[in-house]
Length: 364
Image (cartoon, rainbow, N blue to C red; front, side, top):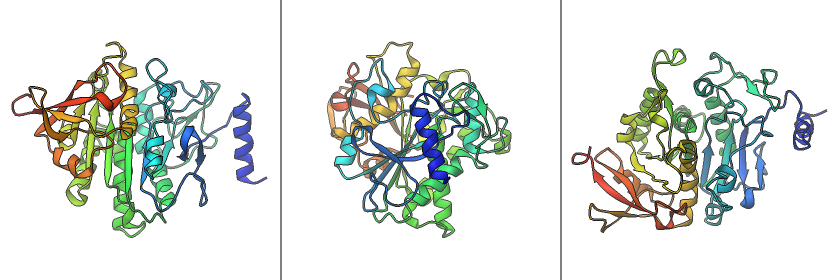
């Protein structure tokens, strides 16, 4: 029996509610409208076109989702945040505007009780938990575990999927822990391009970090460096040598928890914006955290939000969103200013949002 047939049978068992104990699925999925998707396994994917620019999203920690019938985030706001989202296809505007839209899934590897154990797998295959993955019965397995880190696996997948792309524009969007992956994969693609392993067109043009998370303290698998420290070094390289557009949003207090590193140095490197989801209760940190990437994906549907001054008067410029140009983002980078949401605080729709520009030398 072929490997494709075995994987298909495993998937059918999963959908029927009888998942096999060793079921494992990860990789790059291309999306169409209405959450239709097809995993990348080679040429001929119905939702991918080599002539189009490409957006690839990557999620973060996925605690407990394997037991929930292998639940995964997608581009539907209601699926991702049932308490506050609504039934809308966040990818539709992207697709209508001619983009390839994909998600790199690593949810079973990210289903760890400790966020730091999921974090380690992004950087190394030989950490404390190795590359074990969680099954629907709650147990962990290594039966089909790969011998590469998630970062290496994602880099391989993106390089193979886009090797013949003629458009040459790549945007990587990471949420939470996935922000570390977006940065690492961008860096690895760049270094491979420098070595002639992949086309130069695979060097990303834009990086989006939605409510990113880094843990505190040095890691043995990074020779004692913090994950945020390595991420900054990679981002600095991409900015200095390839003029990449880097944007970052904060929507929750997740980095203020006792294990989180707010990575203020990265904040000053990027174009940085604060999202205020006041329609969610103050204690719903997890909801505010998740909504960051839904807001950004959905913002492509609307014009870029207005920038306002201290008196809430429009300045003639725009703030950050998926509709903001790369040139504008680069002008916003560097830590002299940040942008804070002052309108649209009680609605989940980006159309009514406005952001005050704050000079950090005046407003620390």
